[in-house]
Image (cartoon, rainbow, N blue to C red; front, side, top):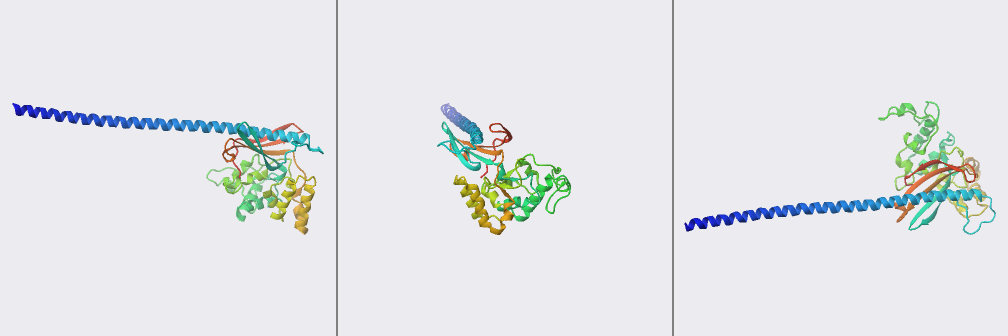
Length: 338
């Protein structure tokens, strides 16, 4: 009987140890699950907090960019009203329309804006077989192979002409209808610059840039008020270099003359071109003029931390008087252009 009691005691002791082990395992498993749940909740909360902060920063940057657009409009109105002033008081300087950067601050945020007269750009709606060389040179200078540049220029001309005959390197319906997602050539002027992405040879990298090179979109216009000639007053360096016979040295001198704020800067710039190019000036001069337009592009970026992380907006406005204007184009956010 004593032996049997010892056996039962030993059995009960063994059963209790097993139960305790099972309970311990269950406790550890529950703790592990709770830790995972707690870590997941912490991660989700942290992600939501960062998302909220990023959204807040994005909204603030957007409003700052809109302030930059409004500042550009205000400066253009002031410029139109005071264009004929002979004396400039301190702090009353007129904004330059050649793309130079201006900055402003609102509270703890900042914005930058640039104003560009569209007459300093290449108008693709007025582009002809004779002036297409401007676009070809712009593309080649941007790193596009010569053969591809010929295809793009001819295809743009084919896209907007009214017939179905394609140029040597161009494209018409026979090409576009053979694509995986077929569509027809427009055979009419461009309505937006983004429409260029439908044209044979144009890629987003060519149009908008790839982070290392500037896209060509900022050097093109659709303004009906501009001609195929380029205004030497406001043309960017890239557009000046697209003019046949133009050299980098002369383009740099033209831009330096414009930045001098000398009233005789434009005549001096033309003289620099005439002297530098010599007998080829007759060829170059047909692509240049000294006038301007009433159509302007305003690029603004709003930022609180860094301009590189800012919110970009691009607008094109047409002035129909000193202070009356209308938007021709507005993109928010706009693709960044280097």
